[in-house]
Length: 345
Image (cartoon, rainbow, N blue to C red):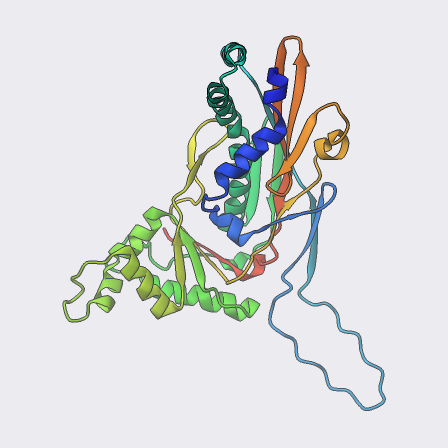
């Protein structure tokens, strides 16, 4: 038995899938579920769920007049390609050689698990990249990425009048009319798209503005002139009752390409969106899946719908390279039905 027998994409993928099966999904995975297509091109229809247009009158025995597909806009783009790899380092290789000589399977498994935990960072990175794109899209209407000499910029065409600003900064706890702002924004979305937002997303800091708002407290605690303890649960129940709005406070973070810890949802942004899926997280077919699967050149396994995990033998120096590749981009069919608000004036 050699390191080539132990460190293969099949085993690494199985280890990853076992590790994440009981893990709660990212929020974006529930809003933009995974799907897959061939190639790089991505096409979708935007704005197809607007207000209904009444059926026109007609005389009997007259030929039907074809209806224009008003409100449909076909969008297409090319999905970006992501690729990174890891080699087993010299220390790991020597430790593997030592444990292979012992024949102690428990010891071998412990060392292999440490190797896999190192290489899992590539799959964690692919998952985080997809969530970054989804949250960037939902909170700005665009996706902008730049690294390794590659620059990508996508504008999903969220209507200009759906990018709004609070009437008074929500941080002004004494006078900010948060409930009034949200109602106005819900009305705007419903008036223009026919769909009323019933869900919202914000950071912990933005949620703090809502918790501390004195206007809301006076409405919640009428008999005590706004004096009372407001928990997350109480405030969420109040907003659900008052606005039919379910708010998600999203505090997860990731490290960007420069290693800087970054929130998926920026502070001072409040996003309103409707029930149901907002789009899909699309995967294309990577070169590894197209050309290397079954070739005998490398071991290739597909996980997470469209992420290719490839293990390749290196002869000099003797090593195993693990490569993770992905072609992915979310679509946003509900782009016309959301509101992106800046809550600081």
